[in-house]
Length: 207
Image 1 (cartoon, helix red, strand yellow):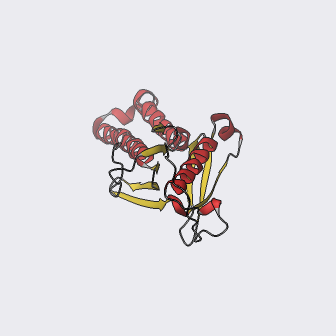
Image 2: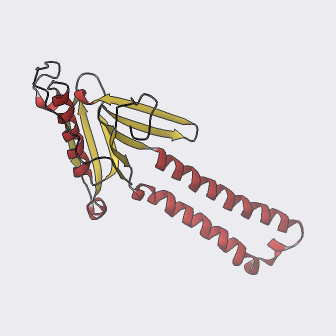
Image 3: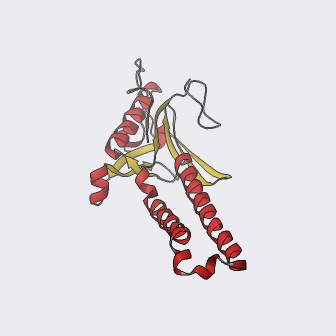
């Protein structure tokens, strides 16, 4: 068994792919943080020469506290957003598609979807930036009342979508069923011969 990523992962349930959002999703955070750090540097290196009164007497104490808090909260802001970005992940296993949504440092939501409930998988890219960096959105349509899964900022979305469909088809063949995209009725299972199955590609990780 590969490394265990979620509580309900079975002993014989291997990870096929692990998809984290592309780093470009953090561009707004990086831009805002850079601006705040720049303001802090200006406050340290430039403002004292423009307004000397700021570094004299009691005003100097206030000045140091304000600048220190600016750097402190900016650093916390960057760290918090990086942790949420890194821990938000979609995991495709030999049995399930799992999304771990890290809503906060101490809050997470785990959604699991059995592969037999997958009806269709599509990928899309919009805009010049997404096309240049080969990132996009992968949507997994599900059967019944299960909500659709959407993986945003997915690296190489077409490859991810293809891998999900391949694994779903192999799962159905292995268990002797046809569901989702393989049948017009997701609840109408058909018994098949069960050949020896090898999952494609092995374990790999997209960052």
